[in-house]
Image (cartoon, rainbow, N blue to C red; front, side, top):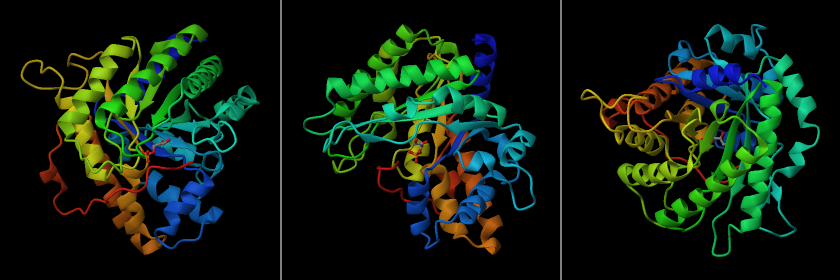
Length: 363
Ligand code: 13P
């Protein structure tokens, strides 16, 4: 394992003012996004959709890496350039989703595991490295309800994430470790924080036991936030303070960085919450700058829906909407870039209609 090289890639992923675009939706999840614009879920439409996002001119200013899906890492633009080459020419790191979706932990259980994706993982990683991937992502989910999460579910997901992370580092890929505490449910902000803490304690314990080098790991986290059905809308300051309090208790200082998923938050909400995380840092020389605050880790974005929703609705699968959709996408990327530096304000949204966010559940 070459920890120096892994650490270099990880630092690039969370470079100041940049974040990650998650464009790794599985076929059924893309199907849901396309249903909202009445577009058929065909291979060519998925290719055109990814081309719209990945060829947005100048996106490398805001985007450090893109998480691709197995189909996408093999696809080309309409002019015949591979998506991996497109990203490289913008200075963007190609990443790849390597979990194989979530399954019920036991028949009829609301809890999910991803253990099945570990079969043949080393071989799949070697192929992705050959295709140009520099980092990988694995998403596990934790469900909050009156009876969950169970300690067994947290433990299983933590063990699977650690095994995946170790395989990645052995293969030369930076693991993006994603234990997503789902937004679905009517739980409180405090309940969300408690489960986030329990989950991260278990995950970082297993990573350590497995011998995973934290300086070559990116944590992809959910925010501590009230459940979608709770009727409560937390302020960005509440979300930021509660989330950061958990991180301070749990995360090792050597961890390379934290990126957030949007999880069903609206575009503006996800941006405002990220901004508050970075504003809540102790200012140095009068300005709250990335990496200069009182936390050892950069905090930035790795959004799918909160970067893509508006652009998808503008695009609608039509060539004539391509430029307008890319403009919307670049605006969102810029807003999140500013938020990763604590420099975002809602006035900057003038002239753009941000999308309202969707349901939290996805594959
Ligand atoms: P959302 O930002 O839409 O939650 O997706 C991020 C992601 O990659 C989930 O795995």
